Image: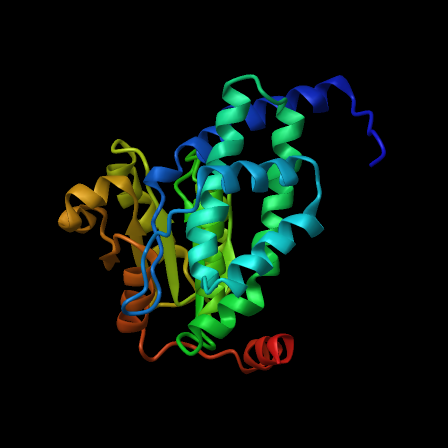
Length: 278
């Protein structure tokens, strides 16, 4: 890969974003929603540490084809796509963050490794679609962390699972309130899903949710909220003005289907999704 020479100011910005936002999000994956998808399916499969280390090293070295061979072997051994995303991929993301904090690799290495991890995650789209369909064809959801939150990969996982279930899922990883307000004003979303990891953001979420409802072009917009503060108190969502909370993505999918049963169907988007997967 050719070395790029960025102006010093850009290098400084990349370093700051990785240090302040990306790596903390990797290390905080324990607070991200876990995902279980089918009745009787384990929500988290533990993969051997040695496999996590090997897989992570392949990502760091950009050996994506070899990483995909590991994915293929796990499929052959009977693991579901959801098992791999929740187990191997999530644990590998955390391992990348731990290596950076231990000075075992540079911020550039972690950036490349995380990019490779996202490529692997996206390569599982069709497999997730096959595992989860049917569920939300034609429905739309906007997923985002609270502004200045660090749940980057966790939101990616939720996006992948909602998309796999047939939802038209859009994820924004570094939003500000004004951006989210414009997004719901310009495009029809059935649901906005917010991830909250800090207790102090619970009450901030109330004003954000009020603003999203005020700006939404969908007068029936539903809002779901989840994250660490809601694990201890599932009823806490009520103080935010959200319609529902979920402790994991299995519950999030079930709740999303329940709170917007008569959702807006974009026929063009539906045909596009079917053409893409079949």
